[in-house]
Length: 116
Image (cartoon, rainbow, N blue to C red; front, side, top):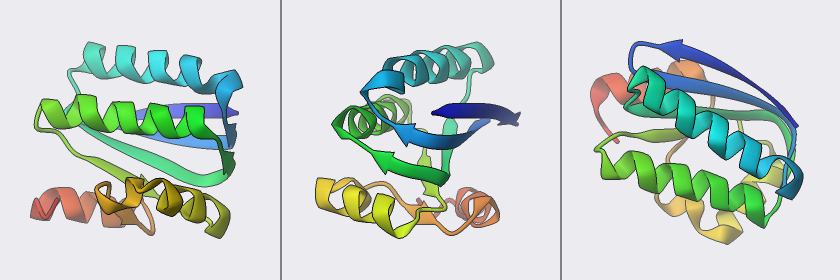
């Protein structure tokens, strides 16, 4: 798995590629947490459009970032889920409380409308 970070205002946008699994989960978590803290980010957009697999470690990282950001009254949005990743997230129950958008533009609209 590789990931790229982009900052916009107080939002961190993460573009993931490959598999979000045990091998990369800790690196991903540490990078996200450190970057969020450094930039005093409030919100997080995770673009999963190029992710083909997530295991329980990956689910844990997403859930942990949601809890951490929600505790600070921030928002998390998942973007670009393919059918395999969507199914894993549905089965885990994560999609019952983390909103999903088709693309980054839709995520920004949710933030602006403060719907989530």
